[in-house]
Amino acid sequence: MFSVLMLLLAVANTVLLVWTIRRWRDFRHPVLGVLAFLILALPYDTALVGAGRWIGAGDLLARLSGPRFTLFAVSVPLILIINASLAKLAGFRWAQPRWFVGSVCLLATGFLLLSWRQILFFPDLYPACWADTLRYVPSVTPTQVCSPGQAGVNLPAALPLSAILALPSMVVLGAALWWRRQWPWLFAGTLAGLTFLGLPPATVGPIPGFFGDALNMLALVTTAVHFLRYPPGAFRGVV
Image (cartoon, rainbow, N blue to C red; front, side):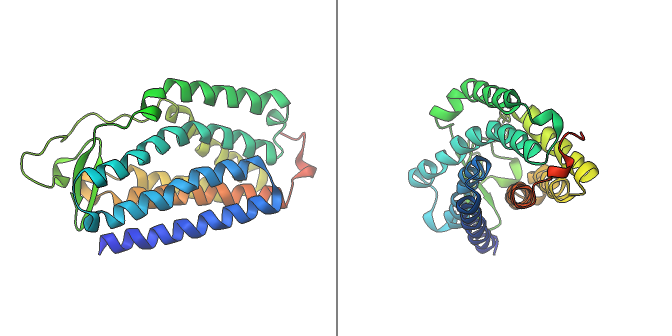
């Protein structure tokens, strides 16, 4: 059942990817290109988890799972660039100088360089089972072991350093857009997405986290499309 649910989510993520690419072709704005790159990982991620039970435990599934974590290490710093671009599109005065987005790009590049090991080398992965799903992860919670005494249980798993800035900045930007631009959807989507991501996988399993990723990306894309379609020219210089 949960494997099929993940495959359905992979289809939904593919629809989101196609829609994002089509909007990029309409507007040709770099922020939609970066978002399309990030969303590209979602169908792969969810489809692989959904198909894991049929692929089976072993080297093949482990090797296929490695890129999931490389893409994650790359994607988190890019969120900083997306947030800066959305603030500029929304007409916030402090985001208009040319140096602003450029400085954020340099900061994101610095975080990418700090994460070079996670980007260039796959982590050690171990099988994790939940209901009828099978996937490979760097750390397995005790409730998701696939066999008694397996390795990789309760190993420390850390987010990229850039997450300290990237995730809170999404919430702050969402709140600012709601307050100043009457656009609540980035805040609502981000809050819902982070809530799903924050649910303890040991209790509820990993599935809500994948929904959280999709909600975060959907909120970012719809926000970018909204302000590209309706530029807040009247607001420029106000905040």
